[in-house]
Image 1: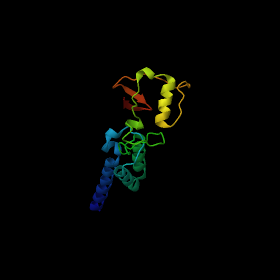
Image 2: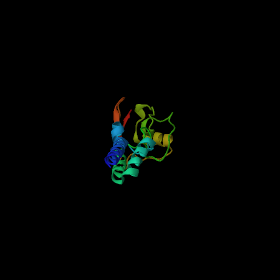
Image 3: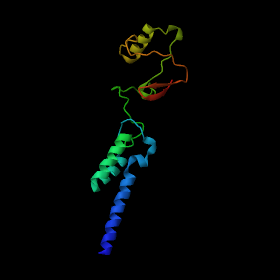
Length: 149
């Protein structure tokens, strides 16, 4: 009977150890705060092992990993624009730099350039639109993403 208790204790400890290692935030702390993208199958499988053996720790592992973003593969976040821009034309977040003559930078000209490059009309005089001059190498915070301009 004593051997049986040791085997059960060893099995429980092994499963809990696997569950602890299955939490993506412990395996990949650098992924904390990532935006949703493709799910890392390795982290998802390890979380599912905990879900299979113990319901509560597995649910907690999934909740923590989804909540912190640790379950998502890096570099797969959706930009949220709903459209894909060719990677050779676009920079970070689907943005691109368009070189224009600074002397021509009036609202109408900027609207025309944006419409020409995106195919969408914009109104820079609309409420909530902020125009700001970007200096070379300056970082801009756009939609929560840091983008170098």
